[in-house]
Image (tube, rainbow, N blue to C red):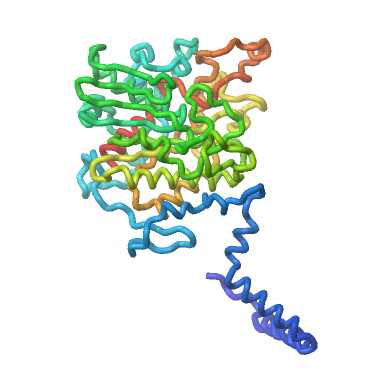
Length: 461
């Protein structure tokens, strides 16, 4: 509640005097008085629309042409289950029992497993050895690529108010019997997929009881546990929507764009999955604005694209994903997860290091509990939260909030210890910081913790 200002009588007198002055002038010019009244009425009726118009990003086309801020074709009809909140419609939360949950319905669920600290645990971690998992891509095999230390492998995440259940690969495989688990997203989600495969394959000693296949275009990878008739899969879709970066091999494109309303383009490959794990973030962060087109990506021209804020474009994709889930998944028998943004550590000044540094040669984690790097766009996280609390509340999506716990781990990146696909230049050899990968993570390592959290939320949501 806003308190009334002091000396309100003086303010009222001043206001009265001002009104009297305007009235006197109005008597001299009735046209001025009528104009003022019209402007007041106009601002009252159309003030929000005018503000939205003024606040739109500059560009050849406005966001309104593509309707990305609110994808109205995906809104549900008004069935009395929600409350209008501006343009968006708040939905009632899904009230059923989540599939695969083993905890009692009346069990205390107040523990936030994503709030905690890292604890040294050399007895139980790593959960597998790098050389024991033949499915790790050479971009993530840090020990094989010469990393001299192993300390980054032996940390366990300890929530403040509870303890994570130990990852049991046999239980996970039994749960996935006759089922499909699919990771959808970018190379960071491929890393989490690979981690899950390494965790599960350790419980399948026979080489003949498992297989690992990749499509010719490398877009779809499938690990099969034959005795369980279970698959764990990865599908490359860095924006979830159709984009000009959909080639899983050649996708280093600076002028990135996505197609509005194109979730079905990739979604047809996800149909039938029993557990879906989505991610998308880093590919959106190329600036403050993003390009969106209505027509086919292959035929898109510069003048066909609308520049909108990154947050608007991201929200469009997130809502389309949720709508696809509504239309294609049975909430009583399937589960949907979304892994939050993975931080990079490209500026050592963020954690008090020398200027010009990054994750290269970093072997200790960040100890400041409140640390948040400059690469972390809170505005994007806010978009997710607003959607999940608003018009996306009816979808029982489990949000894996790994961002803060990963912020501390500047020690866990692949850095220079990865396969290099082209020869290093003399300048790179002279300064390894120039080619250090501070985006991806060594395996075994941090992403195994992400899957421990996924395992915990799958069975104990």
